[in-house]
Image (cartoon, rainbow, N blue to C red; front, side, top):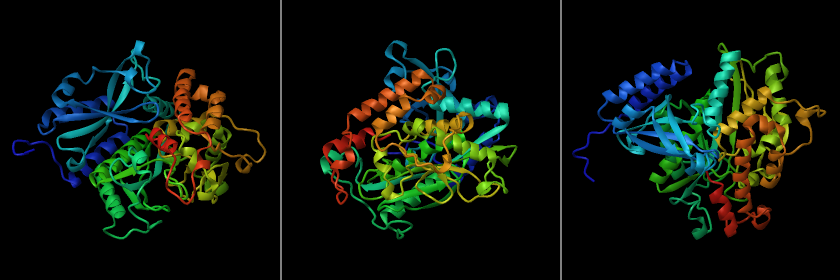
Length: 476
């Protein structure tokens, strides 16, 4: 279609990065919400090239939902955006379906026109209940409230950075067409750190990194991972809500870029048997007044008492929160010790089979790395459960807790039993959300064979038809 008569906003990647970094700095500095709202509304009103605002929110399982509002309508009606919550998995029942979308103007992004289309900007929404508070099923709002409370009461800033692995497969919608093809086609066989310039995987990584950079991710490094056609693109840490938002954007960008290149970016934890699965290593720390509270040059592994207390509480509740960190049937195929899987409920500075690792750090970078997280989990649930557990959970009296012989479940049924039986989850999520989440995961589990791994030959990529169901329903 001709663009002769169109004049929609298209900015260079350099301009985009400048705008997004400025917005990120406002968010980091906790500029007052009403100040940012006024600035954003004025920008929208004064910029004729913007045609629509894309609002993003996530359901209980972490699926990203997007809807476009005409800019002129949004500017006038931003405080009265309603939608039918009964149509969203894990949200309200039909009899109480009306929910409202508020806009988190601090979570505002300018996007590359060649990837997202011209004349559009993105903003994350907050789901508001009829009583005007954050809706309990919108875990982004729950996480935001928790983070704000920690800052108000203790001066704590909750920080996170995620290392998100994925696979790049040949063909568009490779996951959805699996039942027809019976296999995934690699686009690269190189392995760890090995991909030549011009290789499809390298071109995908380069393009994705460019988009991330333009959107203010502040990239650090990117590379092929251990398995064939596997990738990881790292970026800097941020406050906990922004970090969770960036996980959603990271996966969205990867999928969009891959589709435009005729390929599929997959974030299933274990799409292919016989090679390493994909994880989402979650690095967390807490700071106060600019000081990293997890750092102690005289502490064990140079980690403070607060840091070790944080670790001990997560280890105590490791089985309780496992279903939140590993949310799909497919995720439990990844927890295989033969492929560097972190399935041991212990902490270590060196053992990558441990649920928690204490990386080498300094006063700025000291952190706790939670390794037992699948990339298809709800990022808001992951970070909320990690931080609230680490700060407010209990500490077990198990002897030698940090090195005890304990393991995460190897199937979703056991994870469900642990989840349902955990009193800590009632405190974490509340009984209503706990039951809704469990019902969704039970339905997913019941669609798949209990001992799925036994029907797959390690030397083959071919799967039983039920495996396809697992892959499809495990996709977020």
